[in-house]
Image 1 (cartoon, rainbow, N blue to C red):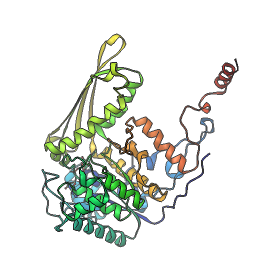
Image 2: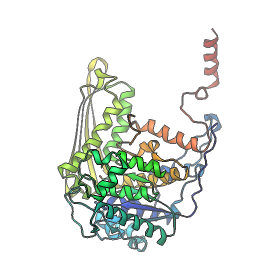
Image 3: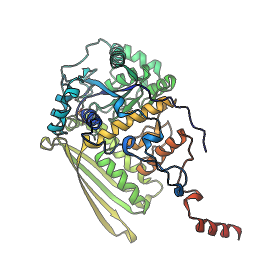
Length: 450
Ligand SMILES: NC(=O)c1ccc[n+]([C@@H]2O[C@H](COP(=O)([O-])OP(=O)(O)OC[C@H]3O[C@@H](n4cnc5c(N)ncnc54)[C@H](O)[C@@H]3O)[C@@H](O)[C@H]2O)c1
């Protein structure tokens, strides 16, 4: 048994701040408010509906995660954020067209009071949209200070004990790490000098970490994936995590991929195409923003299949991902996967997946869980990259030099064992002798004694 870790209790209110108050953010906020009123259930959220096994299977101890670990309650949450549009959360949710009008009207009063603060925005990083609710600070450092001021005011006005920030804004254009991202000194100098390689998402992340607020990145932008901000998070003892919520097609890939690999079935090609018609789709219609998403989506299969270890099965796999903006679909994304697999003696087979999903319905519980578990990490004194939350991301952020784990089932084991560790429970790897029945163990002992 491990020692139970010291975890501060989740007293008072938790403020959840989202840069970006579009489809995902408003579906998340409206969902929590509706669930609190008993109008709906937070389906898909592990923090609210998940269970965890403790001890041996024979003990049959499977408490709800929310009763096992001290988590912030949904009743104690307040919401805020930034957007380039002025619409309050009710108007933005109506525009997003994800949730029914009737449901939104039932919580209209609560949603209308949440208004986005003026955003830090730079059209060079998100090309296909224009808004009017934008800060006009002279330098990027001034913009960061303005965000820190917003954070303090929000905390005070809403009487919050703690805050977390989850990036729910548009995907920025593809950026690579450059010299000014390598240390916090260089990064701060570059903020003062308005350096073009600093994206708005990095300014939000900097402001959050400086303010002691955990930051999770829901989009595929670089953001906290740069040495400067990793260094700052460690120094300030702030948890960070990223990137790109694992939903939709990639969720299916990380469910199917490990399954095929486990049975050692080969894959000749995997063609994935999507059509979607929401604002996210409009932003991704820009080549540079799509490139950011493409890199995030492509990396998944390589790491699941490990072609370097199984060259006959996966080395020559052709993997292609397409996303097309198609307005009539709205938030109802449709994706097709054509998977050409081969088995015994190289005989070919095909799998076709046609997923008619609602992106924001899949993403909302991920935002909720990330907010809840990032807050837990902060109260447990966990700082820097939170790899145990890889379960929620398409491109999990890991310590330098480590290969990310994409297999959703391995990610889930790591996630649950982290909770067990925090609470002083025995870790479960499903391999120990306690996983076999007594007769089987006796047989093992007979073999051992021979
Ligand atoms: N829905 C999913 O399943 C899913 C999965 C993975 C990643 N994502 C990512 O999550 C993000 C949000 O998705 P969405 O469907 O809500 O998109 P959306 O377009 O509906 O909302 C994004 C909002 O961000 C705002 N915005 C853009 N730049 C901003 C800035 N600098 N500061 C503040 N606000 C800014 C936009 O005005 C917009 O209202 C996107 O980056 C998307 O790629 C979504």
